[in-house]
Image (tube, rainbow, N blue to C red; front, side, top):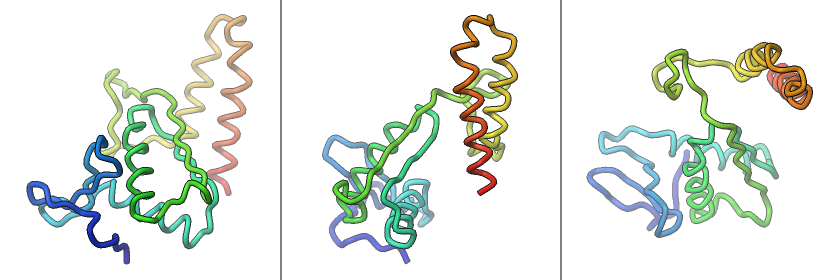
Length: 155
């Protein structure tokens, strides 16, 4: 069971929220209807990875639009006593924004998902039509990232 230390949650319009630092946006732990959020899942995941899996380095790879979320997540996890930066490294790697076929920001909440390896493969295939001089500097990193993603998904 995931329980936060007493005194960390604030009631705000029926929600239970916490702040990592005063200037942070609120992190919603429990919604006004009693449901949980991505914030809740991410806090529980950090706790599980550190305490159960004995992780010493957490790396989150998402689109750059999630950067603020991961800054606040790190601050809240630290404040809750879940994350200690002296013992565990925490990195967010933002890679831009993923656009759908309609050229709008891709939203996973709509139920559609694209596997990272598929995204990288498509990027690699599209890159083959670029100017050869330009591609010579990009082809190797894109190909190695696609291979790394495959290796991770197979493991």
